[in-house]
Length: 482
Image 1: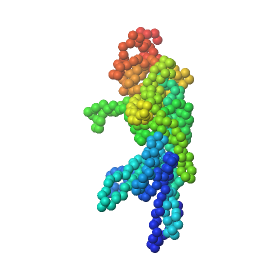
Image 2: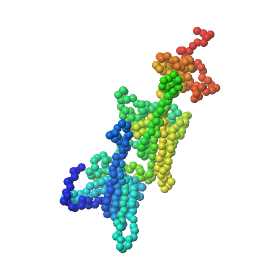
Image 3: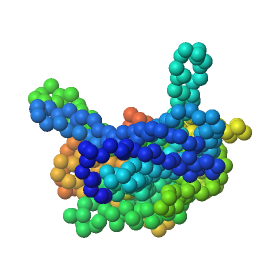
């Protein structure tokens, strides 16, 4: 960046000597005609909004947003046969997308020598062409000045004189995609179990275990690499994450604040985000090559239908073919990935989309919508890691301030099974279980079916009571042999 020369008050020659225009997408006349006289560069704005903070009178807190570039406007007196290339730029932009626009400003320095400053605009789109307005005049009226102008948007600068690196550098954004895991959720698959451990949002910290979060993320991304995925056109503007825990408070007239609270477990994590599917050829990310003169677009395919991708998204709520062949019908499991942001292993609960643009053949080439994911629970403790079969009976130790509901939740991921734990261990009063006692935990396939109220559902094949009792603590009935 060169230092400006001091202003010379005695220098009377005009500083501005005109400029030239170059639109790379237009092949016939990249200047869009001649006689451009004025240029409005537009404003560059760093968006921010105030964060209201109580108690501060003299301070202002800003939440920084995106960097926005204002539109550029060129104008000139109307000249016959000079406007023909402007509508061609509109037509080519609709077909092929953004292009490079270079504007060279010619000026005279204080010594009278012609100089040039170049501005190169990246990803420029024509926005508005203000066409000339004609009207007749009488012989006594002065002829009006007929002008026309064109306005274009852009995504910033590159290789521009006098601008710092960073404001004229293109961005590189990681792709945003929804990875589809093999197998269904009818049973906890090995890949789901492994990824659930890696993509959990409650990973151990580096200080306590010495494990780097970046290494865990890289390992998870490496495992997700071979699987099919749906890549979205742009990353979502926002991600809504919802997590809740269930507590039950029993009213108590003797409690000074509130009644006793019972922990009933954790609800699965929910993730909701908007998405855009776009197959319009003007919106595809073409490969671009940089040069001194600017960037040139490579040839791209015609507009592509987004219907196959939309059908693939909707199929995430339908039965997967492989799981159906294996005997259990379920929809696929998915993982949302954007850079270091990796969701837990989830399943799709809701998808809504709207087709917003079609081509001349009636094919939808753009769709917008929202998708909601819900965390899929993986219970490694309940399954054999080698065969996937049910584990045999196990035991649980009663800790201080433990309840049967706590033990049932740790064992079956639901506190409602506390009655089965009590029945298996001959516990008459579930509120009086001494710490240190070792309880028998029945296998899941031994548990009876229960209603939402906890009552055992009627069954023609009741489970044998002998299997639901702890042989170590069961009392002998009177009259039995010693």
